[in-house]
Amino acid sequence: MIPLLLGITVICFFVMRLAPGSPTDLQTQMNPKASAEMKERLMSLYELDKPIHVQYWSWLKKLGRGDLGTSFSSDHRKVADKILERLPITVIINFLSLIIIIAVAVPIGVLSAVHQDSLFDKVTAVLVFIGFAVPTFWLALLMMIFFGIHLGWLPISGLRSLNYEYLSAWGQLADLVKHLILPVFISAFGGLAGLSRYMRANMLEVIRQDYILTARAKGLSERQVIYKHALRNALLPAITILGLSIPGLIGGSVIFETIFAIPGMGQLFYLSVMARDYPTVMGILLIGAILTLVGNLIADLSYALADPRIRIS
Amino acid sequence: MGFWKMFYQNKLALTGCGIVILLFVVSLLAPVLAPYDPGAIDLKNVLAPPSGEHWFGTDQLGRDVLSRMIWGARISLKVGFVATGLAILIGMVLGAVAGFYGGWIDAVIMRFVDVMLCFPAFFLILAVIAFLEPSIWNIMIVIGLTGWMGVTRLVRADFVSLRERDFVRAARAIGANDARIIFMHILPNALASILVAATLGIAGAILTESALSFLGIGVQPPTPSWGNILTAGKDNIDIAWWLSLYPGLAILITVVGYNLLGEGIRDASDPRLKR
Image (tube, rainbow over all chains, first blue to last red):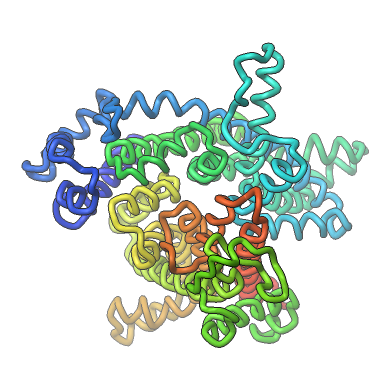
């Protein structure tokens, strides 16, 4: 965990240094918006006049204090503050999509394994295969056209309607939910195909095990065999897959937040990249990696929690 | 049953192969196949819906969408192959070295892989692009540099299981050096899984390029790419559905093609499936 964290900071630091020549030169040459003051601030942030290990160490010390530097954008705000105010939206949307991924993919995987080679299995296999290949941003566009413009059912941009202030508490909640449906669906979509296919493969392996035969032999109903004995064992490895899908989810937030104009961390990242606001870009890169690390840690812990064999060792 | 026989009997794999070959042909013959000049602006014919004249309609500058998509096929083919080639090269060398030598070299390389995997790939790509100019070459390099970790793990696993085998000992006995053993004796045995990873990797690289171009940080207009036609689709989402529909469909079919081909190769080369 700690070595990984250090490794992450080293890579972030070197991405910053990746530009040919001094990063400040590159910025002043290529960015008409760069001023002498910006160059100075960048110089002081990374102490570019000192040897590289000194630079890294003082940058790391600043990180330890939660100091990610000051944004280059016109608001001159602390990068950490800018990220923190947008982080909850991204985390909530990703959390909701994780729940949807589990709620949809697990039953699909289980049902197609239990009814192997049935029509349901074949149809979902095709859908899963297409799911792997669909560019999510394209799917987002199509859904915006169909549900937003053609049918007019769902809003296609932002998190709130213009009249949000005048709605009742329930009305506000309903408004928020309506705005969230498409982004959450799009964000979940990428993970759905992967997890359901994985669940199917797991389930197929588990129901061929001896203890399932035992469960059947002692006269348990098919329901109990599948949902109590088989499902629990097939679910275990899926936790790891969920952990592994977190970077993809966070990375995808750039795409859906940009398309749906949602003021989260992904959109901030996109805007910062476009504006070459390097301190913010580096800050979000770092936070994204740390979020992934935390997600994986949670997956590992819940795996241990769910599987007694791991707890003992 | 041999590899080719298995492959020929797999209808899905053949379909994938057909799609990939079709894409090659379209890319090669783009100047002949495209009905219009992909850059020809026709301001009298802006955002025209699909018709006999313009099968897939025209964009916000009156350019023929079908012609731009045909030229865009070249871009995605190029990005797919160069980016994946780079990723495979890095992954193959690092994985071979890690798996062959083991010990601290292995530990260092594999921890590096773990760290790289912590970064949401799309974040890393965007961050690096922010420091470089968005150009097709930079995109290909960055996608390649952020996509080699899976291949490294794969090749390492193959090497770990192969390095103690008799044919390796025999090679060593006749005096072959490490490089010869790695590249001439072990690597050919890992080729099938590398080929599968490469085919699936091309699909992933094409998806990533289209997403980057869609966000305006990939292939820059006026060079046509499937992703940047979709940007125009988003800008005109309420009036021109054809700008959104067709390029995405092209991406989908391409990615399905490479995925089918990759899985076909996997099935045909998997000894467990041979009867």
